[in-house]
Length: 116
Length: 93
Image (cartoon, rainbow over all chains, first blue to last red):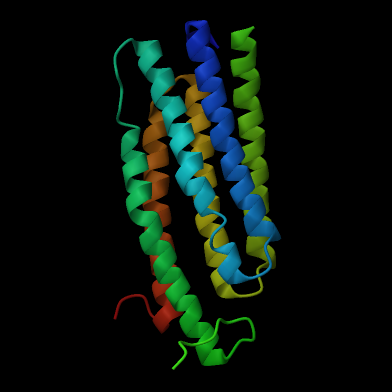
């Protein structure tokens, strides 16, 4: 671990805390995906990983590479922009497909239709 | 001291992300319906991307960030295609 030893102590603590926070959020999100009871509840859980998890991990990566190279490096933020743009699109389309399938097959757990 | 904490934090983060990927895989195998499996695949893509980022921090190579970007792109396209397939039964109408 040659390049990590080159980090000053404050940067080492900052990068470690950011990486640990990001991985913790992603783990909690996936645990929720495993533990929740219903598809419409489960669809909320992994977004914790795609928002906070990715944000903290990308911040840790940006901090690490910027301090190691001695100049600001920001192209990791492309992943953040891309995830922020695409996650709502995919999940809204997936929930719409699930709703359509549930109503066609009259699955018991499907939410009620709009009240008249 | 602080570098020991950094090394511990990166290894612990990688184990946490591996556990998260295991949770997604269990949900993908167990999931009662097709939409649960697609959702678990999407979460698996995101967790794999975060794991690649942490490997990049550990090794100091910036190539892993570009690999993570490609994984995010392919995960988006894959989940979108699966959702269209679940909605209509065909991907391109």
